[in-house]
Length: 351
Image 1 (cartoon, one colour):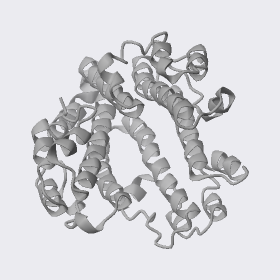
Image 2: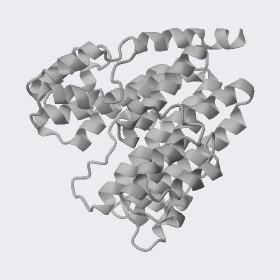
Image 3: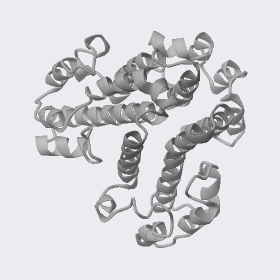
């Protein structure tokens, strides 16, 4: 009863926002658009995409610019939800925001290491800086990794990035992994520190499933596409185990013939999720489809819990990835059926 009282207003707010997510009919309509001007016009008419957040001319911008534009939409929704939260729920929202912050730093690092003069990594959205404690001026004045590390000296990100910087010729990939490890480790500590009982159990599953499936996906990619040896895979994995234990990880990492990887998954608690239908998807797409299935189930089972916040923002992020894919397909002249297929490969509608 306490949970119902605590989450009732927020649940109603998120239900209203949920109703603005794209439907299958929207994806069908988008797939039929002939150019990016029509795409922008269509998007600006949707209630979930406020006109002031959407650029009018998509034809002259690149994917990285698209990601930045749509990130503004996510921040706008995050901001609306945050204002319905009490002090404890704001801790959970801060945990979610850490992911946005880590993604921003990944973008900064990518531009620094590529030595790009255009400085597109500047984050102009005031909502981002409303919730971030990072030193905006110091970060955006950075010209080298040493400058960025100095700007991050007293933050949770410094240690892992500094250790990575001491490697021989660290790549953007190495820094991305370091930020992910820092992020998930911080999340796991925070949920134990601030939450208990049923609340902690729900938050543990929300993040634990993501961590397990990310590790499953990365082991597959490391072996299939990079031919990495088993001992080299372990340091790259998130060192947190929810329903995928260390023995499961060892068994997956030791698979020699990748055609047997799905068989190895059948010995884990994730066997029921990797159905024959999902075998037709890439592992990244299968991961997204499984997470969507799990989160939507938890939202229905626990409509007055942190699951409603996390699930909504996850679905919105997936919707935005679908829109970016659709925009790129329209830009390059893909036929409508292919645009639709690529946007809805993991189940694009909000059902």
